[in-house]
Length: 506
Image (cartoon, rainbow, N blue to C red; front, side, top):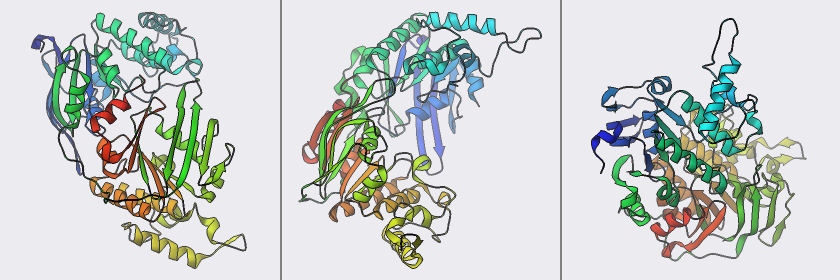
């Protein structure tokens, strides 16, 4: 390991507690000067929480930070930026109606004399930053006209404009093409030559081996290992990430399945910038089978679900629900009527009506089943259905009339799943079904998935959590960069092989 004089930022004993959750547990972390410092770990390992502490997004519950040997404490990102720490978040934070220079200096504009904004000064510095990043982008170019990779360079320029000595990049390549990744890596190497220290978060193993100098592995909120990248290999990373904890299974032995309820052939979908987010994917789901899709951020899992349900209409390929072909232009409503239903990844944004009652959230997708004479709702039947669903799914709520936003995350998720079940699906799509819920609620969701499969419903779910995919899948698909890279039975699946398959194609 390098001499301690090369450590520019040191975090010691960092602990972060939230109600009911210990996100970081006494973590020590070093950032080496002028190097690419990789942080890796499974979903929920504490990576984002740690860098949020380093960037001043939130102070830790306990622990200390020292920068260049001096103790520091950040209560906000402004204080961290003043001390030379900048962060480029996974979700870009740019105003597309402003130009490059205006975005770089938004909120900290240059002023000169009576003029409110010194445009010339801002454009001159923006041009210098773009040249430093090897980007032939005019400071006057509207951000809306830039590609995703170029927009990311503008985000990096924003951090460098504040004289950042430490730059945090959170999943910087999740939306980039191979060419854009190559450009980003070239920029990172040039920045480290200029003395900038990079903190780099990613799941993509080969990518980390290509760009990293040091690697730190977190597991379950704890520090697991640190090493020089040139002294380790991918199998070592996988072993340290996974540990030896036994995987709990929710599946009984001897499960049997029927004919395919879903057949997807050569599904391909291209995003707005021409990058294939789903790339020639073919698979099937049988009656009573639980098929899990494992993949990391940007693998294409959500986009695949959108193609299946028809919320994304610009895709190629063929889909069958049982023996019935699903036309590309068929509406989502008609797909639901035919027996397909989706529980979306972002529950708060796409899954619930926060100010509406539990009853309304449960029944809104299946009102057509309880219409009398085509226009009036059979209220008594609706009340019975709501009461039955709340009981069957063990939804903890004092009354069906309570607003859903008053429920815990786990109970909200049960309501969203219950709404899907009331459409009488043949195929249930679950996109990250345990996102944002506690351990007990996760177990309830898994048991529910198994029970539904035993009733003959085909279940297709996605997750970036390896233990979840191993716990409740009869068969496991792995997606990476839009492609299907593995299709294995649960009994023969090896965790290390799944992790390696999830990093292919980068």
